[in-house]
Image (cartoon, rainbow, N blue to C red; front, side, top):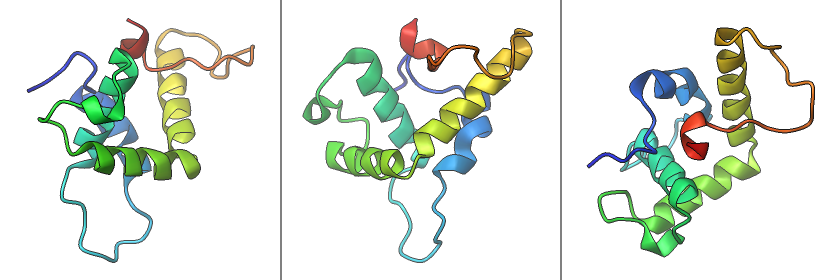
Length: 110
């Protein structure tokens, strides 16, 4: 099932590299990173609690653990900065905002 908050393929292609592990050791991830990011965006968009994540997403604990690790390592900030720069280029705005506000994914505020 897909949700309005899910990233489009071209959006995911733009930021996918930020969510790849630096260390390739281990058994790998059972769930796709895009699906985990989509789950996080769903939570942001709906305001749902972690444990209320729909069953067609990876388990809430898996999603939370990835979110926490990515947040701690600055992954979200780098990915959002990249998307903001891309959007600003398309709209002929300054590449860096003149104010201290962060612009988030357009689909989150829609």
